[in-house]
Length: 295
Image (cartoon, rainbow, N blue to C red; front, side):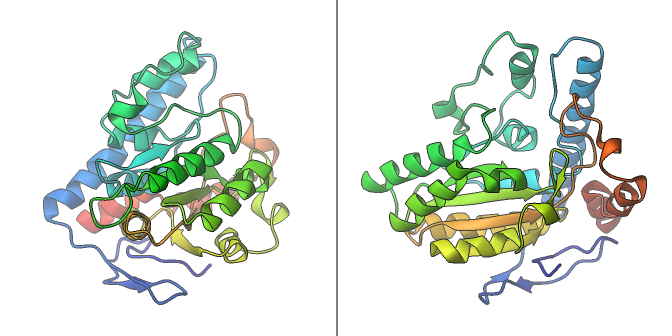
């Protein structure tokens, strides 16, 4: 599908790309910054694999893997300014890592011994939300309050990002948050990681139009980005956050990506998708893509 892309699946750079509204996106990273993004994704994937192994050993009750979604999470996470606040689901381990939180912290939640343990106000990253879509309303209300407090406007203003999956777009909470954010011009970015499945329900059975186009019906812009391209994920998210903190209202970013593993460790994806589909997406692996470019 048509989407913003700055790095092709075979690792070739694209200097710039435009969205349907004509906004141009590009990045200007140093060699060390490129390597830093690669390092982030490799570490996050390794941590994710270790947590899944701990669940199989009986140390965790359940685990929600992010394998395949590292570029969407690291790209958007690194685009956040220090003053920005993030509202996650239960899968944003990559964003958590980018916010400087000890990646061991969420293991307590999945082990069932605490609620996560970090201070949201200190690290600007809210607690994991298990209820599908509930965090969208939390984020919209928080953003509306900050706007009323006069903390929006200029490059030093505050902005907010809320993460959810394609399945959550069918929830009333998410659509209601779209209404409130639009009407009150809230400084928020709705970041949808479209990993193609709401557990076992494929995206083509969830919507008749691309998800990013839904924003038009609520009165704000929507952009689809290649969620396996960490450069494009960074560029699109940063632009949306900049617009939000300058008082230009909300944006819906649809990161078009793929969940390579199971929905959680309680799920068996072989029952609803075939191996050929997984192999097709593995060729678009976000880590391999950036590694090829670096090489």
